[in-house]
Length: 379
Image (tube, rainbow, N blue to C red; front, side, top):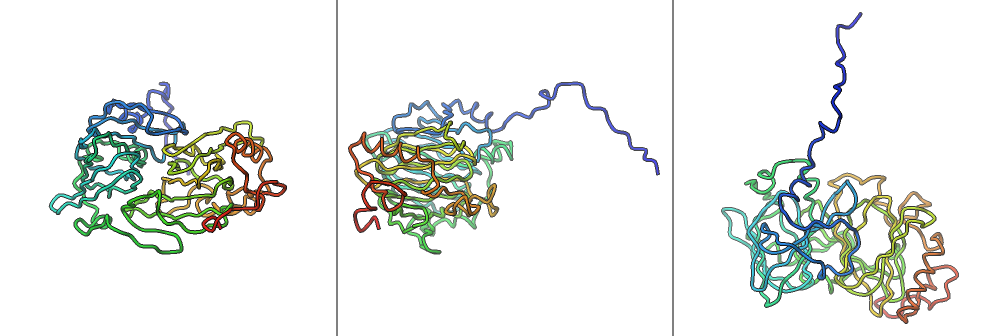
């Protein structure tokens, strides 16, 4: 039977005329705040900021150089004895305090507010769409970095009023007045569920031998968020195994001195070396980007990783569940025996530059360094 359907002819106008404006980029422009596009920062406390009226202080927005942005970072500074503007929003926000001390008030309309104090090293999460306001209790500026899922949320909703003036209350995520910001609980080996960590720099961690070199770790489930976080630490004179996963993991350095290597090509021709110290940050820019972290200092190195969640689904290629499995077995990790020899050469050269010793003999075939970690905490 013949069809009477007619196929419409394609318009002659260029396709560019039909492109919808990026809602997230448009919001950044309206905020008139400094936007930085990069994925390596030696010290977040040294980054120049611009006025940010929404935050009641100064700030900058950090984006990785990748059109697909699962998250961003808001770097904010509150004036001495100052306070931020009250706000709420439909995107999630995890906050790490870089300097200063003060308090935060969190509340829902019609309920008593919660109040908690923070200091340098504190890590907490703002419950989704709850009101909050930060107060700087010190005579110096207080600075924090917050990782949010604003980019996909704004691109999906495309409405500032929905994002910032939505009255819906997520009672299942935040029960106001229940002291949600005090304490937490450990479950499933090394997973800690909480909304507030008083000092991430000193939080107890647990063994994870599959990641190499005597490293320890804790996974953090914050305020029932989809966004995830974890803290990792590794011994002096060692480095973690190279691996890859989805984009957007923001690694904030809590202690130690060292560097990270990032690359996508097997011959390391696009290798980038990112030096770091306490207060620095390295961001994984893409899901094909291998990265590896090295401790060249005199103390254990610790970092806080703030990353996108899976919202109940596996990320591309199932990377999230194969982070500690060899790429030879379908995972995402490069075992020490399989890494490019240039990796260890760079590490040895950096150790020599810092006058430190390699302690990778127990892990890397052919290594002439000392035999593994050197104290009880390192085993």
